[in-house]
Every structure is written in C-alpha cells, then in structure tokens.
Length: 287
Image (cartoon, rainbow, N blue to C red; front, side):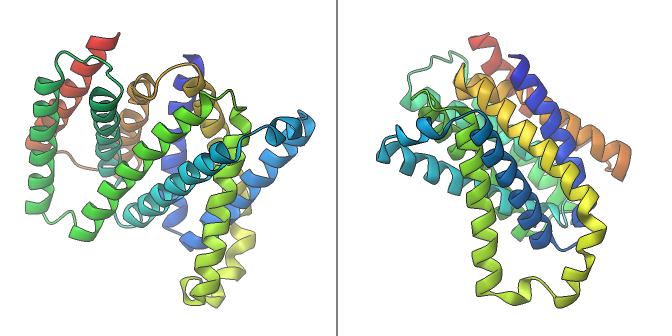
C-alpha cells in the first residue's frame, strides 16, 4: 500500500515538472532525453540485481504482452504531453479521475469484481464529467483536439495499467516491466523524430544543456513513480491501485491552483464533486 501512495505523490510532482518543462523546451527532446535516462537506469538496476536470468524465463507470449502494455503506456504519455502543452493541470487531474472509472468498468464487467453501487457511481461520474466538459467548452478553455487527446490518454493509461497487472501476476520483476516501457517510449520518440525531423527544430538541440538538470530530476521522479507503482500493482488489483492514485489528480489540481492560478467556477467544482463522489462509492464497496 505504501508503494502505491508514494507512487501517486511522485506522479503528481512529475505532472508539475512536465507542465513547467514543456512551457520552455521542445517536448520531443524532453520525452526522448527523459526516457533514455530512465531506460539506462533500469538496465543498470537489472544488471546489478542479476535479473537477466528472470528475463530468459519470460515466455514469448508474456513478453509480447509486456511490450503491448508498454506501447499503450507510451501512447498515453504522448497524448498527455500533447494535451498538457496547452492544457492545464486541473484538466489533467480531472481526466486522471476518469482513468479510475475506465478501470472500474472493465473489472466490473470482465473480472467479476462486485461493485454494488456501480450504476449510481457511474451515473455520478458521467454527469459530473459531462457537466465539467460543458462548462469549460462554454468558457472556451478547451479545444476539441485537447478533449480527444485527454480522452485517448485516459483510455491508453487504463488499458496499459490493466495489461501490466495481468503481466505482473506472472511473477515478473517489476523493474523489467518498467525498463521495457521506458525503452518503448524512447524508441517511439526516435522513430517519430527520424520519420519527421521537423518535430525537433534545429535550434532545439542547442537547448539540451539548459534542460539537463530538469531532465535528470524528472527521470529520477518518474522512474521511482513507475517502479513503486508497479510494485504496488503486483500485490493488489488495478482498481485499488487506481483508487489510491486519486492522490495524483487531487495534488495535480492543487498544484495547478497554487502554481498556475487555475480558476474553478462553482459549476466546475460541483462537477468535480460529482466525479469524486462516484469514485468514492466505488472505493466504499471494495474497502
């Protein structure tokens, strides 16, 4: 449980660092540099902990499953970064709540995890989410592209979390899943940049020295967040993990208010309260 709580706090700080870094530097350089450092860190830890024998025992089907989960995670990250570039931390926090709903819905329908108040909880979440979208659309604080990207982010992250949960049930060391996911992110960025060099303007490379410290800090935080999250997920189900990770959206929203002066109308607060109430009902059933 402590791993999941620690992971949630670290993810919230990571979101804040993403927002700050993206406002100053090219996002592809940031993603590529950060994923490269975390990949190298993971490989070093695997070597030091002698996990190569464990890698050799992983069944090919399981390895493909890990890679698929990592691809979904990479797609979720890219969608999040593209949306967050012009979006707010408050918006990211709300969509992090929707990830919990997606995971709960899957487990309710496909894994027979009983949630007696699922219908009421779903209604509260859907009404709250719809009201929130309606409010920000009326205030021109959201583009349709951002909305689609945040929804895709929520879907990809939820699917990745579920698939990683199935993989971790096979007693695979969490560090292996973490490292493979970061390698997939790095290789994805390399392929994108090579196929479309215009994604990184020539002058963007000269900024690399300026972002070394932020990148190293982000790499340490996200690696610790992902690793502790996977360790926690290994000993529980993804719904419990997602519910504990409610700390992330709450802190993310708070950081948005404190550092970026994100404003909340009474209508938006009411919508957020409905979403949190729905998630709480789900939590109440499985606590």
